[in-house]
Image 1 (cartoon, rainbow, N blue to C red):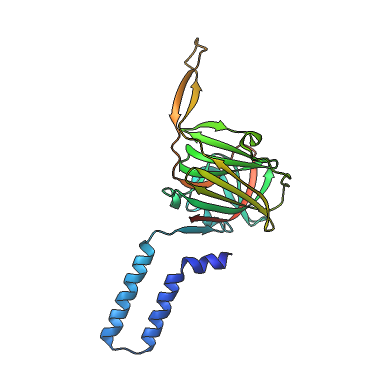
Image 2 (tube, one colour):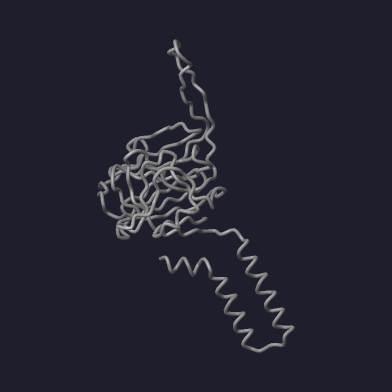
Length: 251
């Protein structure tokens, strides 16, 4: 998979290089050789400046963390040859997709303790959708201005027919299409789960204490604005999971 996405990422660069070598081998005049080199440089500059429509991050090396934004423990594990996410309350998001809207987010994961929080449509680390995958099902979360609204798996219709096992590798594929999130989970290419969840619209009301001596909380509505944003992961406290082979691809 890593080799495939390497060639997919640099396909035009490879083709341009081959053409340059072929043209140079034809022993054109100095003028034509210069023209070929200039054209080649412009092609490379154009391809490098063009926005990519996918990113593949294998998470098999410490350097793979460079483009992630967040705090907490998100680091390479040499034993499992993957990344461990834990003790990260805000989570981590991939910095190169902050303005993306509709995309597919695919990765391999292993639940080590409790669950894996999967972040979608993250405008920043205080506003995003999170699908919390545990052994029994998926609990959708909305984080708005740092506050949480949570749906239990049964209420959201996201209970697994068969519980996931700890310490086994699964593949998760989430597709964001407007306000619909399609969730699919595989084990050794066998489809185990395929459901949708709709991102709510409108406002979410959070209650805040007024202050000492006033037990009546004040309710403040916050608009849900999660039409675009990057993807990532979050595990708080002692929640632990391993991740590798991350693919973020526009649809």
